[in-house]
Structure formats: structure tokens, C-alpha cells
Image (cartoon, helix red, strand yellow):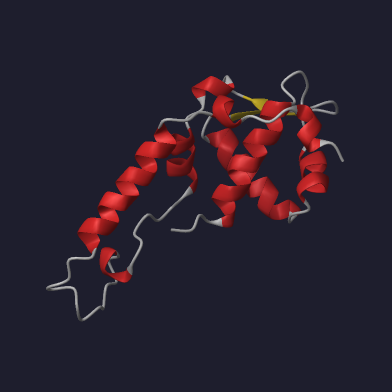
Length: 138
């Protein structure tokens, strides 16, 4: 399995915000640190804000901060919010055209593996993986 860039950046945005809980963070400073597309970063921030993981403060001295405590942000829940497709192979998708599908037994192990992956992530919160602010010095 491979996470989308959207999910990857979502985790990194949350880690950045968690490391600077004493103040608001800006899209510009995250953009400078991560060196990613500003448009992509804004989409991620908007999704995390709509999902209740970030809070956006408008205005001249505005910015972003975590909307929840790091220990209340479950990694599996974040991933369910940011990943749109957990169907790992063609036969799991509605547009399945695989000729092996009628007798294939691959989906069972793949579903089991995905469940184990999500169960493992579900054991962790942002607090468990949080970095110190010094990790984000630039």
C-alpha cells in the first residue's frame, strides 16, 4: 500500500502544528519548510480544517492551530479522512475488469492486511509521534 501525497502532507501539517502549539502557524511557513506546492498545501489545510483537526483564525495576525489536543487525534481517523480509496487492486473497484475475479482469492488477504494496517494506526495518536519544535527549525 502507498499513501497519497495528500495523506502524507496531512500528517506533516498536523505534526508541524503540534510542534508549535504555543502559537499560530501559517501556510507560508509550512510551505517554506516543506517546499511543496502552495495550492496542494492549501487543499490539505482546508480538508483538515473542515474535518475538525485544524482551526483557522482569520485576520492579519491569523493562522492555524490544532483544533484538538494531540492525544485526541487518532492516526487511523486522520487517514480515513484523507485517503479516498482503500481498494488496493482492480478487483476491489467498481470498474473491475479482471478476468480472474470469479475465482480469485486475493481480496481476502488484502482486506485482512488493510484491516491490520488500520488497526495498528488506530493504536496511535498525534501525541505519540509528535516532534519537538527544534525538528522544524529552518
